[in-house]
Image 1 (cartoon, rainbow, N blue to C red):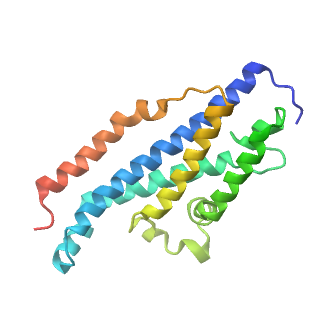
Image 2 (spheres, rainbow, N blue to C red; image 1 turned 60 degrees about the horizontal axis):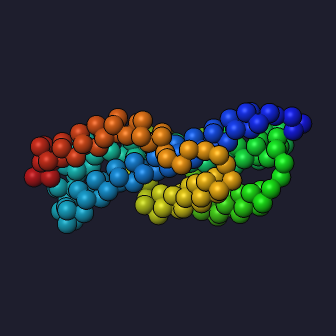
Image 3 (tube, rainbow, N blue to C red; image 1 turned 90 degrees about the vertical axis):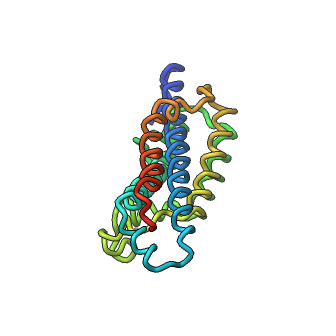
Length: 206
């Protein structure tokens, strides 16, 4: 692929890359907030078997886990797109950007972050569970939303996103504010408040 993009086209690629980073950042943040609700209610059970049963069967619990997993899934898919490695890249990725622009120090810095992405095994979430449902990893698809994604995985993904944000702030001419979150946050807050309020009103643990 020749390096024949105009300044306007290069700016457009930068904007799209930043948009994906903002999207991943938002969904990770919301996934973590939903996990907090889940853990708060779960930890209040104090190993009471009857209450645990009611908690896990509660529709609100199922709703929280469903969205929490899906949000993490979206964030990982966004990161995988950004780190595309195809010889002829076609996705909104750093590889596509570097193929069409002059190389810079950003290339080496992105390669370091890509290695951290693989070390954190986030690529395995995408390749073996989310995108392809491999037999040796995914298990019964029905159980895919029984448990939330653990905080340690969210935190690792957040570190990757934070580093990408820092780099693009230095190298790209993108808006510094996460306008994706600003636009969709009211929609998420409806879900969050609904789940939070429902736990209190239904008092499912009694």
